[in-house]
Length: 262
Image 1 (cartoon, rainbow, N blue to C red):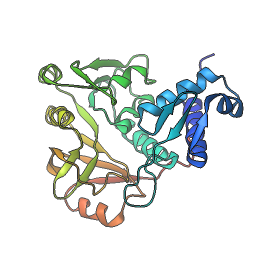
Image 2: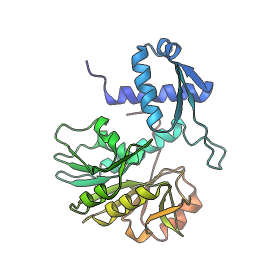
Image 3: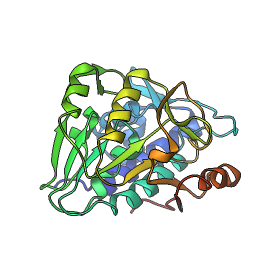
Image 4: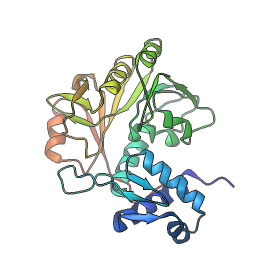
């Protein structure tokens, strides 16, 4: 019997919570604790590794520590719940027959399992989309291009040329930072050009998905202006002062973080 997406997400949140408390885990011990096979735990750890939340070592894994200046580890299960809340809200904005762009953002990718609209076409440079749960009638179209690891992003001239041949009715793009001075920013030059093209080749609304850790941040490469955005979707834990500054220039929706997985 196929395990439901919510059950898999619930288990991975628990795995991440154990890592936050212990700092590291061993596969066999974690499998016994969670009541699943070691193979299942290895798959869970591989999925968490792809998000940048953990490091792997032989027989186990350790938590990646990253402080955004607030004293809180941004790769925490709490942040995952924030991102899933944003993804759920964004997924409800997708309508039957839409063609949408999503980029390599983990939050943007997270909308796929929650899209209930029919006959949706998703155009993306995110290789991980092929492993994401989605409706059977959803069509995934990949840009192609050079594969950039570890994010598994498709970039380069081939991807840009293909994007120049299509348009989308909406886009759902993540970012590494958004602020009132520079606009929408990312840490990777090659992804900035792809993101900018996705932002400009849209005939309808342009949605930016950014959890609290992205609000007010400044990264090296600008890929869009605030006036290019139809709506910023963030969470209610984002800095009130920074959100209010953004509200003076763009529409902002804040969603409550999930208390538990749906």
